[in-house]
Image (cartoon, rainbow, N blue to C red):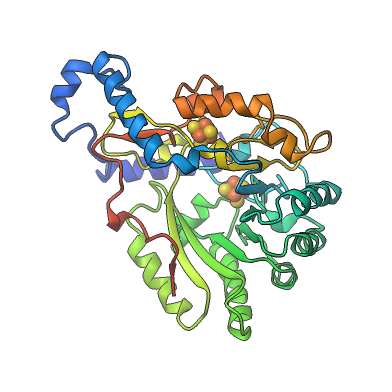
Length: 378
Ligand code: SF4
Ligand code: SF4
């Protein structure tokens, strides 16, 4: 077992021995438990089935607009590269089987042409997938081409900045990116360097300082800059100090924000599931998933997929080299995948293993103190 994994497992064991494992399955559910439930789902009995059906009917009605696929997706994720400089334990990148590589600039151009003709009002184009976008050797060329062809689209990128040089950061600033997000996760060296395995906190903070310095010098709030925290068992309980640390440094800088999100299991592909912050209740119903109605992920190889957690490209409807995005979006495969997602049948392997579709009863929402309010902006 690699050194990194051993270190990580020790850390998780240590956390557990301090008693921070949350209680599960309390809250008066014992009665329901005796009547209906197996280990993991309410679906197995008439009661569970009824609860699930009612819940999903209400959910679908309340979010009708999310479950109508237009002619094009409202959000596109374009994986500029699947090469990464880190080996984060919560990310499936380190066990990814497909070949890592950079997106061809010609493919990005083909997509941009199609979008500028048929979907010029695209809301959001995220330039990341499973990899560090800054490592793409033609990042500047791609960014300026996208900005020229899609002047109103929000171009965003999530990066780790772990090995970022000043020139790479300049490339983002000088070519019209709208939003840069960086995951720092913890301001404690011993946590950060395990959760962001391969990175050094000191070096990342220097890169962040360079971004902030460029923003201070600029008249504009753009590009927006968000510092994020992926919550796992490693950084559990560190939110307050994280916010305090950054509030201080972000004061007076325009267009900056903090946010946090709980790590999920990447549709069953997550490497170290022990790191997940488990919900307090183990009883859940499957809810419909709106992801394939709104988003696509185009992998660096050109495969067009219908879920952003699809690390291996299992849901691909075809390759951008051989078809257009519009054709893939309206294909029979896409239609079938959406049908299953809306019905919560999830026969497709990827969705079967996914926990995003689970709605935990009596524990649907995290406590407000566990989260930084989304995009708290100063
Ligand atoms: S989470 Fe991001 S930085 Fe970490 S290994 Fe995955 S792709 Fe790389
Ligand atoms: S259920 Fe999970 S794996 Fe399936 S489309 Fe939704 S987010 Fe992706």
